View (cartoon, rainbow, N blue to C red):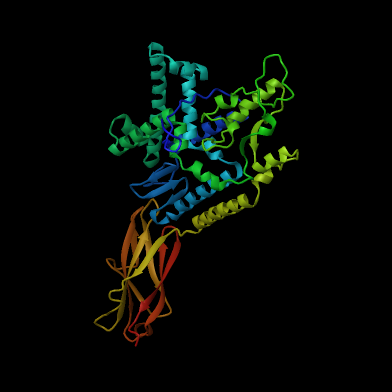
Amino acid sequence: MTSPDTETSNLYAKREPVFPKRVSGSFRTLKWWILAVTLGIYYVSPWLRWDRGPNLPDQAILIDIANRRFFFFMIEIWPHEFYFVAGLLIMAGLGLFLFTSAAGRVWCGYACPQTVWTDLFIQVERWVEGDRNARIRLLRQRWNGEKLRKYLTKWTLWLLISVATGGAWVFYFTDAPTLLVDLLTLDAHPVAWITIGILTATTFAFGGFAREQMCIYACPWPRIQAAMMDEETITVAYREWRGEPRGKLKKGEPISPDQGDCIDCMACVTVCPMGIDIRDGQQLACITCALCIDACDEVMDKIGKPRGLIGYLALTDERAERAGETPRSAWRHVFRTRTLLYTALWSGVGIALVVALFLRSPIDINLTPVRNPTYVTLSDGSIRNTYDLRLRNKQGDDRQYRITVASEADLVLSLEGTTGDVVTVPANETMTQRVYIISGKGTPAAESERTDLQIWVEDLTASQRVRAETIFNGKGN
């Protein structure tokens, strides 16, 4: 016999299958709407078209890894502009902090991909096998033709959803119609097949079998959320002071005056997709999906008790209600110093990204002086400096750029490989042009140590100009 001091505790509890019961109500309806909208966006987005002209893809949302660009409708992000992606990730993190501090794990309960696909898989399971009691009976039933038929039907539908999920993901990385044809004709690149296979397997396993285990053991957010929540955070909770002491209610008999409103019907437990009892208090497994609220409100309506035995409330509301006081309004919980600070940070990053997006130059150049040597003395005594000018053509057609120099000193510009001052950069490509700046013998620029100058680049097609500032190195005598 093992003593309590030497007993080994398991870090992982064996999974007990959870079969949520069908429930209706405002929160269940909200979850269906969010599921439909999010899945609709995910599956439809790769097929949206956007005309960008010749030589550019017409897919509205495209992560073009081959050409190292990201397209989002009229916005085009190049590799050197990755700070836009970093900014969006920062906004996503701040948004998660904001929603969690205001209303608990609303992301987990309504919009997390694991929650959305699990909801869809559970609905398929319900269509094939029946509601909770029927599914429990089928699980305990010995293997026979009925059980095999229902399980194979369910798994087949799950697999089709999983394949569609993996297929939709790869469509974001290449032209969707073209890839679809390649997949149907078995001509797609092996990377596409491998990606679809991995995402199909993970979706099938996570949504069909792991389910709540992913939220409890794999996801770090339940452990992080405690730092994001405080006593003013609104979350799903059981009003113990109203429900206890709980007791069973016999049909046709009134509730005893000494009994609380909870009749221990277990409705809140049977509808929970995580398989927990909200009456035990806040738990790591709770995703605040609020289905227990719908179930409890339905029971309260039947027994003639007011709704809200289980509801969204904050810890400060609990103390106020216990004392018979009026709790603060939900808006006062949402709009407080902490959430306003997160909102300000989130808005600040968003505004900065929008400003940077509209202020970015239509012509992208980078000018680098060649430092070894800093200058060259030509045979006629002139001083020459060398620069590498990188021109990036972000347009869908070839562009001609005129390159000129501007300075108070008398400087002459010449381009390597061409006799004029105009170069052509192919569409969607970057070209490095060697530029020479020459100052005649005895001129102030040649004799001075440093002279300021500007290199101007003009797009002859769009009549747009940008400049780069640098210095001309002289002998410094």
